Length: 360
Image 1 (cartoon, rainbow, N blue to C red):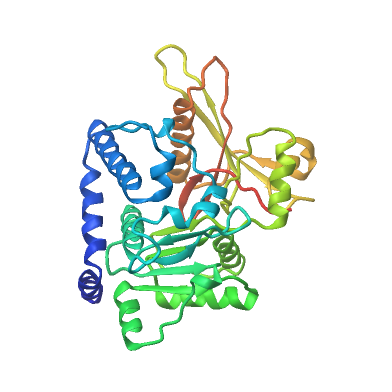
Image 2: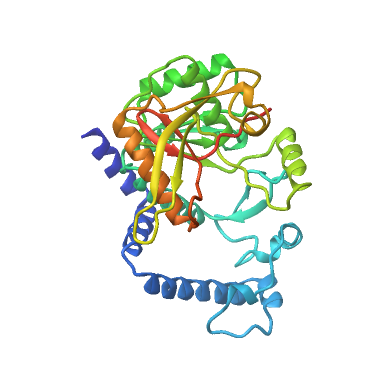
């Protein structure tokens, strides 16, 4: 009842956001061909508007013919160009009502300033609400934000501010610095407020998850999803990426997944036979490593013990084996005797597929 009341109040306060959300939800039903046609129409409209209403794009796109525009044929917009031409990119001039100056999160090391209006915010939030729905959230459900950008954290100053926050069913915690005491306070806040979604920088939520796990703190069953966003890289992270680039220009940075290291081999089936998954094994680090990293896996065999079969509930084991076969087939693995070794973690009775890199 309370969630419905909040949703009603929020809809009245943000009518444009909900109209945009409804359009997005309707587009989910389009076929691939219909969606591509719609995207091209929207892109054409956006390019024409930029050419007709801004000094920068009027000059930059001079000579580019329509009515259909190909993004691959348009000049690349660089960060430096935005810095130098920011004012010339504003439709209607700098005296346009409602124009605001915003900043990116600075994930590349330096935040980028740009102009925007409230309409841009409504488009962004409508898109966020659609993704929230995919996790099971509905308007009126609670969202708890852990935000590392200090300039984005604002306390409600007026009664109207507090009412808007109540209707939005969101709280934001300033997480630009934290200690063990703060982690405990956040965990207690999650327990007491019982949100449906958690959202924030990946590193902050990873620290909180590790703290909760290490201290055996029970999280509320109301949580249906966790959303992470781009963030500023620390110096040690940049150094790690640059070190990896000395070996290969393509670097993959994967999110941490905390849990057990369960492995499953897959053997390709012959002719019409389906691929088959092996028994599960668990890699247990017994010395010198915090987790099952590259060295533990390939260089320091004595620091790891493999237990087969792994101590996993039957239902979970069946799901893991099915996921391993699905991944094997989806990746197009072939050849008699070829195996795919897949690492899984189990936490909160769910099986996950992925890797678990950690800070050294």
